[in-house]
Image (cartoon, rainbow, N blue to C red; front, side, top):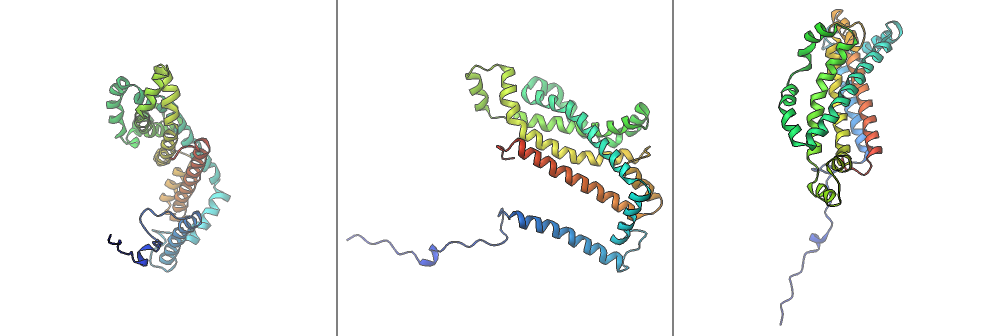
Length: 277
């Protein structure tokens, strides 16, 4: 007689209970929002404890209450909204200029290997040069006006965008390219109908990341030879040992960057809803 298979204990058939915190386990949108806000609340609470409790001198770190008072003075007496507008304009101007130059070059490098062999050594070399190192030369060439500040952001962004776009375009699926050739497409058609549409979500994500880097470059540009902008306000506040205004300027930069990042993400999701990026 055949031997019946051994019975499986009922406990092993019970569904596995997932832990609240597990590797790669997603969280709900509500939990993500609460956790994100919770960190900021905890950060401000710790900041207030050490400053209002007298553990840190106001000369070195202003309290949240002092920062709010200084922020009110900046907007009501020092026209800080104008400084914010100038900084945003500089970031967008330099970033758009870098995008217009870098995206076509990146696509050409990714699509055509001779172009990549010709440009990649120079672009890779320039990518490691800090944008701040060019400021003395840019002041000599363009003065201390708006052109110099736009060029700092341009130099800091353009080489990063070129290489990242080239990598994205060059990573296109070979089977799609071969299929397009089979259907009669020429080289220009491959770039226009296969490579660019396939790389568009990745290029958009690259631009979102580099926009965040552009904010670091504009502050460096505004620290030297500037009469307006958030960086200029921070420099003036540092000379007066006004840490409340310095902290508020840094927070404003973070808020604007966060808003622009969310806006970029929303636009990317709307334009490329079919993408998983």
